[in-house]
Image (cartoon, rainbow, N blue to C red; front, side, top):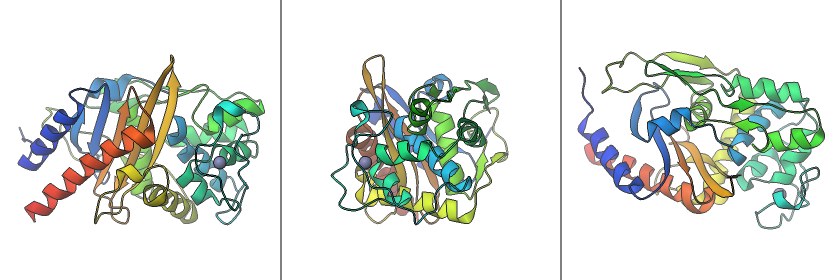
Length: 305
Ligand SMILES: [Zn+2]
């Protein structure tokens, strides 16, 4: 049976130390093959369905571009309190001096922008794009069928706006989220997750192809890079490596849930990562932890060259 390489064991040891006193789950994979390089709490990552918060803006952004309801150059002025959603979902980014493009709205995680965008989409179109990225469907990995999560979008403007920012009746597993962002890293190809040390190890297996126009891929990638350069994901930055990703913060049963999901290097991805923490925020907790793990990965990789 194949064994983990020393580099992977070291990354796993590093991850174990970082997660020992935290509640949550982390997956680090190679997006071009689906191989899991390190994992913390696989059971949670595969089987807990959770509100994705703003990480779901990947889906609403892709849907809006592919359905032709916005172009990469169109702009919307943020008025801080989103229509249909109200004060509890007000924007946390600094006041915008000019209207945002979709790229900047992703980088700043502008709720106002995505609430406005949501009413241009039908509930069916939004649901179709959630499905295109694999949400709401069971995930077959490591010889088991895992949780499907939930995608239910009502017809009202409020329901659409909530779905566009990952709230309401949208639930995802960390593994589903990792595969959705991996598809952006690899021109739409999502590989089934597998582990070299598992008895079920096998060759890379393409499990899903998300068909996206080049301008959609380019706009999303630019948004995720900008998010790490100057937006809510700055904690995930690694010196000398361009990281791309998205944060999310959601509320469940009174607790604040923290997300970061992304990939690096942005221009030629070698690694994809999802971090989920049961306490905290995406910007203050999940993104910095992802940054530490990515830094460890690239430092060790550099040392082996
Ligand atoms: Zn805003």
